[in-house]
Length: 131
Length: 244
Image (cartoon, rainbow over all chains, first blue to last red; front, side):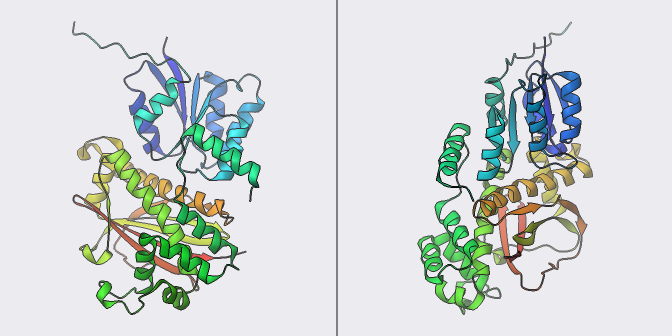
């Protein structure tokens, strides 16, 4: 069974990079462009991991994380923050809310896979054999 | 600003998550500048200890000089006396930007981006890509990124790991916007850590042939230039500090 991962980022570039990083793995990648969409997708799809940006329009990542942790059905989903903001206040606030990991942009795809692999099982996608 | 227990807890989280610290000289300089009542001698000492910061301050203080032989302001002390402490703030802002930009190229494009004197590059002519991000709070200003259309395409292709021929204008613009986000996110963190809280506006990216840089009254301007292979990037930072 494929692992469901939700990427929440307003940047299409980042969502494409995240998608490319997980392509070799048996992963269903769900996408959302802000916290509001992210929360709705998390409620509907129950992903096994959320990769979350901080600065986004409509609803930012900290608000989404707060709401996620207040919801008894969603609070157990591990979250990896993926953000360019590594300021003390931000890191302290986010870490206290409860995140599994924190990755500062710019990042290598390998780093994301390594951190994601500590949260969920990542199985290599079977290689298609010619008929 | 957080107290000692918070700082220790932050250090613990930073260690656990592998978050790199801002260079000591830069965070010290930002803290001194943010205090407003800091003694100039103390700021001079911090800048003089870091050859990179000293060189950049002298470049800011001699905006018309083509090289060091044309400098009319020759010491850190003199540069701060003539230009005010605001130009030290520009240094404090430009360093995290510069580090984030070179790290992004190294990490995501496997390219060594070299910081060069702006006069060493050919410069931009005619239509080019310009991205900007505004920031507001205790410091107000803008960060501008300019590059040629060809360089913008090469950067987007490198970041996305795609062939340049596969890219549309939306992907190129979005990649330039993300590059700006990464750079400014890093420098905002440094400012906020020093007590200069500010918020970032969303990036705006488009094509223009206008090479002028709008500068608000009382603001300073620092221009930075970078090169990697055929790519040339120009960064401009304008800032008006201590806006309560």
